[in-house]
Every structure is written in structure tokens, then in C-alpha cells.
Image (cartoon, rainbow, N blue to C red; front, side, top):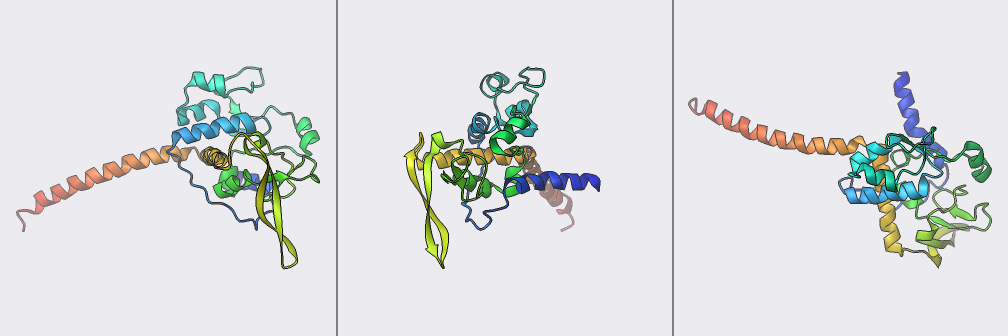
Length: 247
């Protein structure tokens, strides 16, 4: 019973820590294909380069990720393993932890960035996909950024070099200010379609991160279906052979 409660808390807490506001925001649909290994690799690269410096994914090991996503260990160490362990060594078997000290995180963001291992599983891929595309300039915010999905978020827009800077346009509806759309103020290195595609890759990786066993289940599922098809054919032929003299 205690183990079940602990598992439930592990799934629920990331969502609680990430956002309590923005539930009424319309979430955009996103298609996640865990069989698209190249997409997952691109998502992993984005996560390691832009997210892992502040956030951890402490329930995943680098070598497990490399094995699941088809990334050779040499490339993994060279291009994705930047954070040393407690002994100052870069080990493929290390957990994907942030090296940002707690005091630095609190001084910078006034909070400790949450672990992101289960965020897509807890909040849903649509939430994460919409959230990563909904940052906008807000001069009133300490970081200079806000988010329509997660109002008053402490996190700055770390992908602004890719997306650029956008502002939120609101309309008045029943004497209330309602979000209408975004307008680009400063272009990034990607256009809107390219950035959306990159966020689909990142969302797919986050879905994998929350439940890596899905990849194993998919592969086993295909094997089981093939086995059942062959077994059905053999059983049917056996049945015909057994009953042919009876009829």
C-alpha cells in the first residue's frame, strides 16, 4: 500500500509543482510517435542543451537513453554528457541530474526548478507542447517573460534564440481581458513551422522520458501479434485436419 501511494505521488507531484494556473487555456494537439527514433534523438538533444542545465531528469540514465534511442556511447559522451558526477567524472551510467546548486537556483528563480522526468506523463503531452510555445515578453515579470499556460512562471524563455520574442495580444470579452493570439516582435533562428516541429520532437522525448518502457512494450506487442497470427493459422489447420473425418 505504501509503495502504491509513493508511485502515485511521484506521478502527481511534477504537475503540482509546475503549474496551478492556466487550466482554462486551450491546449494545442500534438502527434507523438515513439517509433520515430530520429525525432526522439532531436528531442533529446534539445533537452540536454537547453533544459538540463537547470532541470533534472533524475530517473533516467544517459546510457539507458542512448540504448533506447539508438545513440552510440561515443556520440553520447561527446555530444550529450556535459555534467560530471559527484566525483567530477563523466560516466554514461550517471543519472541525468542538473548541476545547478540549490542556493543558486533559489537566488536566481526564487524556487528550485522541478525534475522533469514525469512532466509529460503528469500534465499530458498537449500541455507541455503548448507551454513551450506560449512564452511572451512581459516587462512586469522579474525574468522579463510570462506564459499563457503557466501565468507568472519563474522560468525565462530559454529557447528564445530559436523561437524569437513574441508578445501576447488580448481582446475584451464580457468586460474581461481574454488572450487572442501571439505576435512576433523579434524573429529567432527558426520560423514558426520549424519551431513547432522542434517542440514536437522535444514533447516526444518528454513522453518517452516519462515511461521509457513504452518502447519495449511496442516492440513486444508486434512480436506477440505476429505470434498470435501464426498460432491462429496453425490452430485452424490443426482443427480442420482433426475434424475432417468427423464431418
